[in-house]
Image 1 (spheres, rainbow, N blue to C red):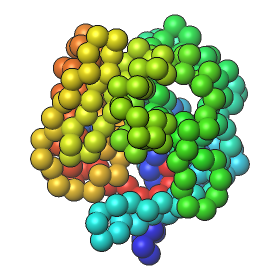
Image 2: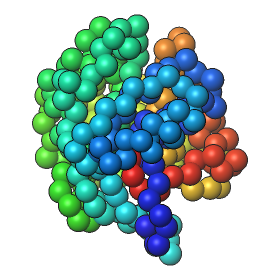
Image 3: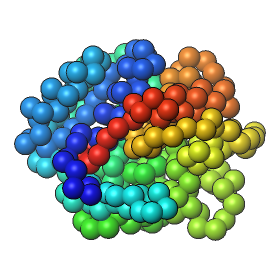
Length: 259
């Protein structure tokens, strides 16, 4: 953390901030450790979005710093409990048709849990939850995830390093072999690549400066919102890239450690 105090983070928080900017109708569903429950209730309430918060055990937490080249170095400090059936707010999700699932570590969501969430819904999965090893210490990426998870995924979003953790040096188009209908790979300032059954066109990103923490979550919910609104994958990626550039330029993506 380079001496900074712990801050709320993770998919629900960063996606929620982006959804507020988009004025997108949505509900935020989150899980944290019991000690953070009151603090997280207060912070999520401030977002002004409907939300559901489950609290048990510990909160998954990371520390990180940026080296001289701007690369982020992360450590896993604590590991929270995986999502369970009792954490699903089925009543509030009843009308939800598109859902963004943002695990922080591998096995946060089991295949059975994803199947339950994806039932009658289209699900976008953040690929960091596939390749991030579930152990304390320096964050490690590998491809030792359960492939059955992907049976329930409509859209897979991967950062470049996550894609290469899966493929090694193989061409990114080999990601089609995962069997997911849409795969979106993001390259930060380098834009994104949208892989569908028919095409693999690159999408440019506008130049932007700012702390990129949370940019992937903002991209995901903007992409999913555009797809839910009827946009084709390429159009959705362009809209998502524009949102992230605007957020970074206005220094609205700020976060540190506690997801």
